[in-house]
Image (tube, rainbow, N blue to C red; front, side, top):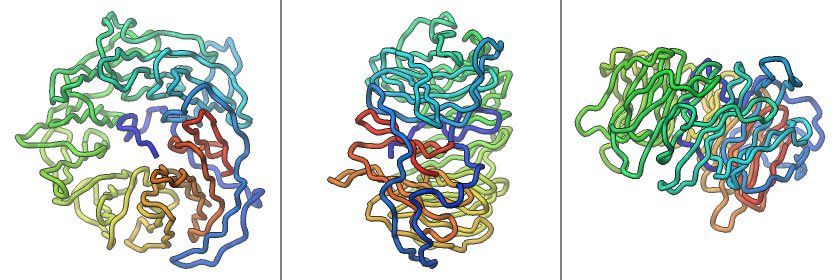
Length: 433
């Protein structure tokens, strides 16, 4: 699965329209297999027909598909649909679909590959970040209302001339956060803008490094670059702190935030490094000397890339640690269970180190991406002549619910009324929950 480096770790108060997972799976869903034996190695008896609808779009589907937001005309002039599915494409279009049927509501052409999508539901708008992967291309962020009409485009809205690549960090009902970057990654010399959601005017700006990751909470904005982490207050944009000790090297997409505290991994070489916490005043709070490539932040910090390790966010105390290695890209936590990937999926009790079940797939890397009360959804990226696959496993024991195999590369999953995924051939699939 393709992973995004930004628009992750977003805190409460940000309507990014990513996977919602509160509804239970309906009983007796068509195509579901019978119960499989329970145990640590569940049997794999899966159906082949989980597809509920398909819709073609005009290009390879990019990440992220976004669903679950209520997006209405804020002035009451148009229909107030409760649910949306926004599909970005590498052909440069953004498609707004009915998530129940796959029917098109509208389509917008941005002229460049659409790289990120965010929803500011309270403002009644959806944002698309477009630009080629090549660093010499000028990027843009364009904002659409519920009917697909353009509201404003950045950089023009803030009186900034187009000059190069951008990153869309996040959005809420009042502000859109965008940062610049270039082809010489550094720890300073770039700009972060906090833009007014209504018209795109700049509310505040600050200096950051080339953004590799961002995390946003109700209280702060954190931006990690190659050798520094910058923190700004929300909503005022005052600089909280800059953490850039000599020799620091930020690693992977590990930046997470809680309140005004940031958590992230640093490295000193292949297979070595540390995981650190920086407090509200910018001081070093605690450190674990372990190699960490993936992080999930819920009731605890869960570290992957080695043993799954549950850490107290306030003190850095290790609550529990498993044997073996796991991968936490996505790493959903639901109903007291953490789901980890690797060569399959494993479920852990978040109150202890008990492994509730483990299932191995015929794949090198599996990422657990979403979970409900009754199921966990995971996928592979294919490769080496292996097709990309989406798996639905029962939350109770890991037994198979269904398997979906595609002919072309797949996007990450989005969870709403169905499980949504797009492929590189330009098809959007709604799969059974």
